[in-house]
Amino acid sequence: MASIGFNELYFLLQGLKWTVALTIIGFIGGGIFGLLVALARTAESKALQRVTTGYIAIFQGTPLLMQLFVVYYGVALVGLNVDAWIAVAIAFTLHASAYLGEIWRGGIQAVPKGQTEAAKALGLHYTSRIKDVILPQALKISLPATIGFLVQLIKGTSLAAIVGFVELSRAGQIVSNQTFRPLTVFAIVGVMYFLICWPLSLWGARAERRLQTAAR
Amino acid sequence: MPQTNASQTPLIAMEGVGKWYGAYHALKNVNIQVAKGEKIVLCGPSGSGKSTLIRCINHLEEIQEGKITVEGTVLTDSTGAVDAVRREVGMVFQSFNLFPHMTILENCTLAPMRVKKVSKAEAEATARKYLERVRIVDQADKYPAQLSGGQQQRAAIARALCMEPKAMLFDEPTSALDPEMVKEVLDTMIGLARDGMTMICVTHEMGFARQVADRVVFMAAGEIIEEAPPEEFFSNPKHQRTRAFLGEILAHH
Image 1 (tube, each protein chain N blue to C red):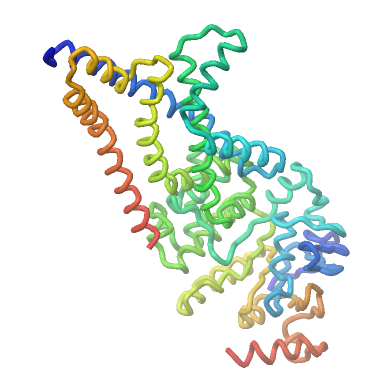
Image 2: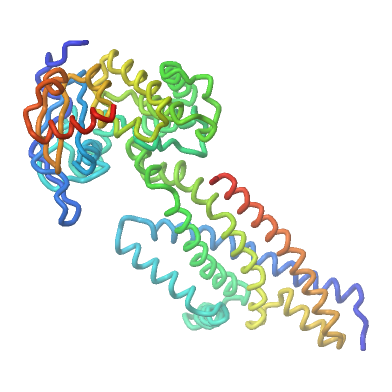
């Protein structure tokens, strides 16, 4: 049995770096598209509503693992020869956009109708109504759920290992195979995930408490 | 009280307006003309369509029949017409509807900056002027939740005034207030009326109606039943439903 030294830890930290990078990309990409999904979902146009409802249903109704496979092989099928890295980033962006879109849709609809009416009565147009009046309130309402999803997304990135992407979990598996110390290695890997996710969860809980105090 | 029927073309006119919510007939053949500077009090039992009526004027509700004209603009569903009408008409809501994430001052400057494209400094100067007028300029940097109901409603009035509208619509502005705060809001509205603002007020405050209204309009079941100057309306109501309504509402006051 080999021991776990600096090199092994360094390898794990490299994996951690990709886990964080993938999460950030998924969250930013998902955030941008998710905002569009949420706006389309709450738009007056019935067609837009239906399309986005279907989009959300597909991504919420299938496993992330399957979505990863479909995008990974799908991208190759349309003749694009891209990195596993890009395929995975696309898959996570799509996945996150559906979930964030649905979370923020709820936030937008939780803003009292009177806010939109007051903004309309003042002559504000759609862009200003959304940007200045509705979204600041909706995103605040959605903050706890958004953080909750972010934590899910971080853990979800471990599934990217299946298409050969070396993130934290896959790095752990590799180190474990080299050192024959699976328990120690995965304990370290677990602690790393925990150290990222736990503060976020605390932040989410605090945001939720603040929201409840404000609502009282 | 200023002379009101001097101008020939009405500022706001509704002709044969009909509105349905699905199968429910909310407004039936509504005809009303409001001259510049005129103050109208709209009253009637709940569900009679008075709020719906004023919400149609600034297109918060769409009509299915008839014609609404505001300051020469025929109100259609087109963005241009809706924008033009909303620029001339301010609205005050029962539940204030201040933007809770903005200070009172920011509430007042948002629309002038976004719609009229005035500079921040200019918008703030205008906002302070109107906040002064409703006597809450000292609260300008607070958030709505830090103010009393009466103060919030006065802030909402100031916010609407900052767009310098030609007419103001009031949708039961004192109904959500504690009794001791009703007066401060009514006093603000009386002051506005004295300065010659064209106003349509949905309210059950009959004292206010007596004091400032040029005409009281009574609605029931989506129809205008009766309209008359306040003295006549209160002393000699013609329609039986008006008498029943007045009997009920005045008994409570």
